[in-house]
Structure formats: C-alpha cells, structure tokens
Image 1: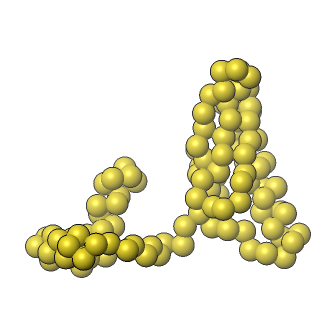
Image 2 (image 1 turned 45 degrees about the vertical axis):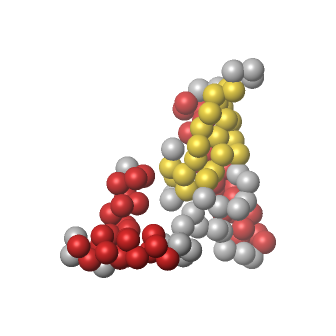
Length: 107
C-alpha cells in the first residue's frame, strides 16, 4: 500500500478482527487500522496527511522514505567480487547494484 511516496505494511489482527498498518522506511512511527480494505486505505491516507501536517506545525520537514542514496559497508572480498561482476556486465558498480536491488525487491 502506497500513498504520496510512503509505503505501508499491513497485517490482519485476528484477535481484534481488523487490518493494522504501519508506514515503513521512516523513523517516526505512523500506524493506522481499519475493518475493511476501503477503511484501511482511508485511514492510511489520513495518517500520512496528519504526519505531514504535524511536521509543518512543528516547522520540520517530513521524513522521506528514501533519499536515493545508500552507503554500504562490505567485506573487501564482496566489494571486489561485485566490482568484477559489474565490470564483466559492462556496467558501473552503481548501475549493477541498482539492477540487482531492483530485481531483489521486484520494483
């Protein structure tokens, strides 16, 4: 489930007979729930809108789920193997890593 660039994980709470969602990829805890999928979507949108409005009221920018930059610390052997694989495929390490991550996340 996504809205305005924010993604959420949804689970079914059998005990309370509701769907429960949580926004992923940011430090702030944003959760929501609903008995139906339609209600869940509505509550998700409202939760994101409330978060953005709260940030505005506090004078802070809302966190973005991802900046597009990633820093990885790898063992030198893995770094070297990835570099060789990228070069063998005729790509930069960045291009190669983007493709690998895209495939792994089905994005």
